[in-house]
Image (cartoon, rainbow, N blue to C red; front, side, top):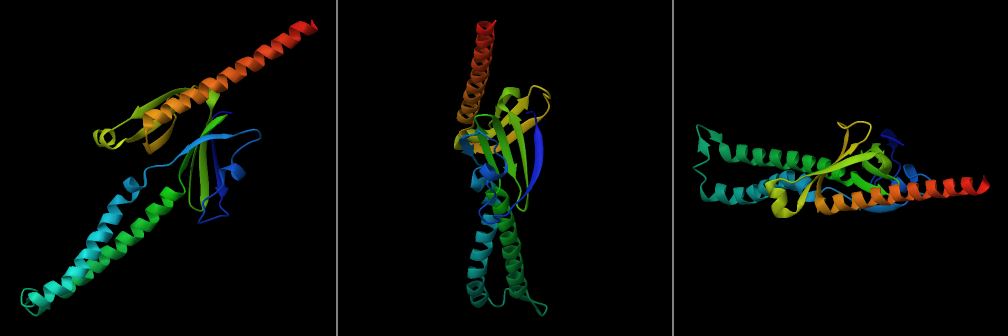
Length: 206
C-alpha cells in the first residue's frame, strides 16, 4: 500500500472528521488510537491567559493603592499596563483556541492493515503506511518526557528509511511501540498463513 498523503474536506467541523468514513478501507479495523498530550500543546497560551487575567484583576487594586506610582510626566502608566494586559489576554486566547483546534483534529491510529497519522482543521490530511512496509520504530524520550511519561514515536518504512510517520508527545511511547510491533507481527503472520493456504491448495490441485 506504501505511503499515501491525501486531503479530505471535513464536513463535521467541531466533531473532527471520521477516519472510519474517510480513510478506512474494506475489512480494516482500528486496533488502537492515540493523541498528543493536550497540556503540551495548550500549556503556554493557557498560562499566558491565566497570568493576564490575574494581572488585570490585581491591577485595579494596585492603581487605587498606589495612584501616584503610575503617574509620571502626565502619563498614566496604570492605563498603559491595563491595555498591555488586555493585549496579552486577547493574543493568548487566540493562540489557545488555535492550538486547541490543531490538537483536537490530530489523531494517531493503528489498524489491522496500516498506521495512520491524521491532521487538519478544514482541509484534512493523513499519512499512512502499510504494516507490511514498516521497517523500524524508534522512540525519543526527553528528560522531562521520562519524568512525565510521554515521548515521540517515529515509524520508518522499508522503501524510504528517511521517511517517518511521527507521533509526537504521546503517553506511554514504549507501550505504543510495543503495540505497533505486535500489529506488524500479526499482519505478517496473516500474510504468511494466506500464502501457506494458497500453496497448499495449488499442491492439492496438482
